[in-house]
Length: 281
Ligand SMILES: Cc1cc2nc3c(=O)[nH]c(=O)nc-3n(C[C@H](O)[C@H](O)[C@H](O)COP(=O)(O)OP(=O)(O)OC[C@H]3O[C@@H](n4cnc5c(N)ncnc54)[C@H](O)[C@@H]3O)c2cc1C
Ligand code: FES
Image (cartoon, rainbow, N blue to C red; front, side, top):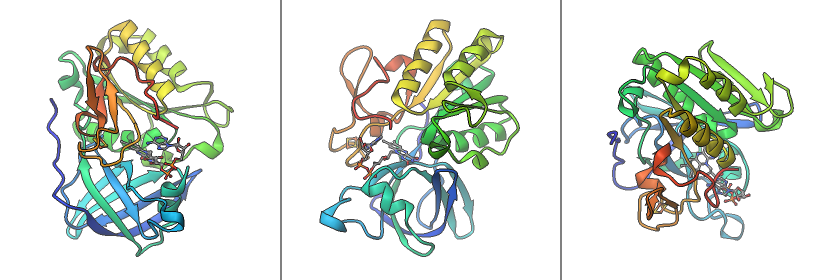
């Protein structure tokens, strides 16, 4: 199993250092003075100034994949890509520079390298959908630093549900959109199916994050061609560190895993289905 970076005990108070629009999303950056640099695929539980406001909501912290991390003399700058879909993400999206961001993390199991995933895998195919592109940005950079050849496929529903492309500072990005505003008109899995028809299927490992239906399509495409794959999944998470059992996901061999400690990155063959109740949006 891939080594994970362990979170220090307790919640830390960080300062927001930037909050900018990127398409329909927000890119929120905070300076973490007390935590270790995360690995790609790990996540944080976030809460912000204004938590517990109207009628006590939001109350619990919200899970966020780290989209980028840069260690410096003052601490680690953490970037989070945020889609405002409810009270918690709404408060986070509205944070101003200098506001407090309370975080716990890094949490969870990170992505493996291609050769950890399968000895014969030489390159990587990254498949992201919507806000699920976030953890693939830091993964892309980590793989590039190791010299791993990669292709990046990103899909969006429409212009309002897209953003964060600037995080992928490379030329090998292909896009798809359901409304046709960028790239191929259709699903990002159409692009994956074409790639897996070629030589890439013999030597690539696939890494995916996005809506549950997209992850399930990726799982099926890879299983049919015997291509190793890791999926970064979502379920509603109340604690983020294994104590509430609210994030249970059925395993292929029977039983359950807690996605916050045994995931959020899972081997595609570990799970029965990626269509888990409460996942994706
Ligand atoms: C490991 C992990 C990583 C995540 N990374 C990101 C990220 O990088 N950026 C980001 O914007 N969001 C991310 N999410 C999703 C984010 O945590 C939820 O969107 C958030 O908890 C919603 O809170 P809310 O109070 O705004 O909305 P709520 O009132 O909780 O819900 C509003 C709407 O969103 C749906 N929803 C609620 N919780 C989730 C969930 N966990 N996943 C999907 N839909 C949900 C509800 O069904 C409802 O329709 C991640 C979730 C997990 C588990
Ligand atoms: S979120 Fe509480 S056990 Fe996983």
